[in-house]
Length: 448
Image (tube, rainbow, N blue to C red):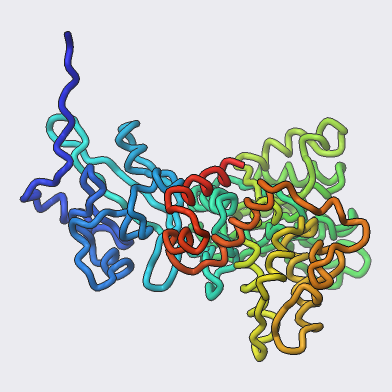
């Protein structure tokens, strides 16, 4: 009969080698040393400054400090890098929402196991990288706003690919914020100090494509009275963002492919090849694979630009974020007026599908702000397409807007989680359920 080897003692030893705790000070970002039982053994100055609340950090659980949870992340419906590392024995990386004195922030967590002389894992080093291109708060200055699970999955991919030179293809419906996502890739890259040059490919005619993209020499054609710098040249040292790349006419796609394969171009009317130096990010709302089958998009160009596809969720996929986005957009409408979204209007927006996504939400709120006399947005101020407009009565022909009970509960729970500013246990009390039941329901929501 064989017996398994005993597990290492999860409690940290009384004395640690100085080099183990000293390594934390080599990180400029918040970093901690963890035991196998999730307890913080040591923290660097950046961590104490970011997460310190006046109480000692040592011997507290990491999930208590970062999330205000009473249980590890995996028991609260999130991915736990420590548990995954214990299981797989490898470094782990995950995007989390962490509590800080400034409010919730997106944090890209990297966790590294440290093994002892016996080959077993004894400690973990956890390093927190703040995702500065997105905010989980209304008062955030970042471009992208959100905290829902689909939004966080998208942001995690952006955080991973941004430091690399890999070409990124952003896929999503119109109005989902593809340019903001492209700028987030740029801002988190090594080229952040260079230019970010967006190009609306749907607005480029065949006659202007080469001139706009590559520039032209003086006298290259009638009306070319001076040499023009093209957008590719303007993006030197930075990022070139080709928005709606699926709208480029087929006969012009070969010119783009040649640019990407040779990293050179010629100005219209020019002879000397010019060296291109940019990081490429593309975006489209079209199904490029279907276009390939139809013969309207080159297969070789598709494989050249689709090295790292990122799906941008539609607003109906991230209903949890609607109250947060609405509050953020209302604050930006008029700096002299403080608009407020009533609970009834918030419920109406949560039940709407938003075919125009965030762009449509902004337009709806701008219209509602014009109709509101006291700064409070009510259902009557919303357009007819919102099912609850008109004081809560369904507009004619909208009887099918009555939702199944399970879906109604799911939407209400998403709305409540996004709107409630306190801790989850307080929210559970307000909802009249146990904290464990709330966690279970949130896990079910993420799996929907």
